[in-house]
Image 1: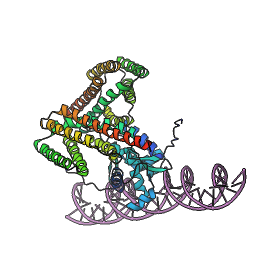
Image 2: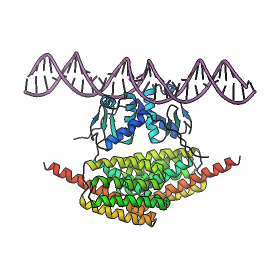
Image 3: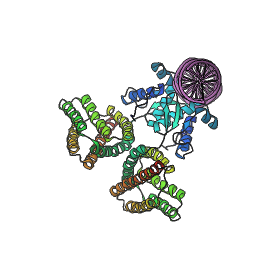
Image 4: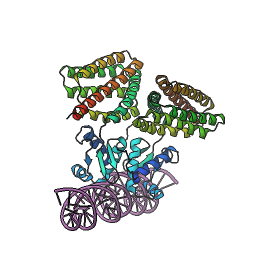
Length: 227
Length: 227
DNA sequence: AAATATAATTATGAATTCATAATTCAGTCA
DNA sequence: TGACTGAATTATGAATTCATAATTATATTT
């Protein structure tokens, strides 16, 4: 029996969930911004029904906040939310590390190696955009290698939420260098298939990232308070 | 500034999400069962619009499966899904253990101790229903103690999904005794506020539960194949 | 002019309607 | 009898409509 994949026709609300989530994660729709249904319906060329369905889903994912009779707002990225989300992501990454080592084959490793090199190249020219992209690619590849689709979806959702923080703080040079070092160590552990240590390092890597972002936020708030 | 909580008026779709999720987790709506919109609209006394919104949310949570132009079905609880979900829950529980030890005060500990005793009492009379309830209470209290609301919501959703497995397999006496022992050890570590060890034990506890359930499923399938 | 009350407008929650896809069922033919 | 065809029915996706809550604009009072 050949496992032919079922044909999947998209519905408007599914398409809208994806598109709206992108707009939010890419900071086109800003945190706290009101989302007037009418405007979005016009720009997407759909009626309110599928749009509202999409908003309900996005609300359950934490990207928008619904207020009864007052419509939807883009959820804001708070210090508190990040402090809650990062430890969870870190715990998931630990699991990713363990599972990836268990499942990754030679071809998979090579693919990650090349992404890693792309990331190093981006770092050497201090190309932030490329670095972010390559960095994300690596993490995604590792998650893929974990072979756990549920883990993937939960991780993706949480990662997308905290990723929005990159628009409120900048990656500092010092942290950047540290992140590169951590990635080198990660590659080494991946080659050795040391799942336990890789998991721990990935967890730590994420918590360091968290600390860096929180520090940056606090400094921003500090300087803003001084105005 | 007193943080007064905003008054929250419920909407139909929110109410429906909760009620439908309950029906699914409580196995009133069986895995694989078709969900005809009309019937549910009649029994809840609402129109299709809020019901459909609720179904979209439940689909994003993984409790129902939507097929374009073919309506909704209750998601089935597969062996594969459990094998994916449990390690994630275990990873979250590990985090719960660490955070709970960090945050739990004397009053919180006493409250958990009493729930623990209730669980032991239920076990001594082999009252499955009470045991499940007390067991769930303890885990919920620990999550509450972790102080991480995002962790709580993710854990709740995943736990609800695997909880449905209790209707396809029975808790075996052997595993039951082992679970009690693990809980005793957990209480000991909680009293000592040893977060690291508690986290590891809670993770292991969950993976043991996973193994027991998978074993039970495999045995069921084995015996069914023999028919 | 500022503050309040009232009316007009707009936006939202939910029911209804409409077009179309899927399913069921009767009829036909081998 | 049993597989196929096509009409009738039903269910679904999405637009529209409707009632009401929220907001804005206008009028009134001090």
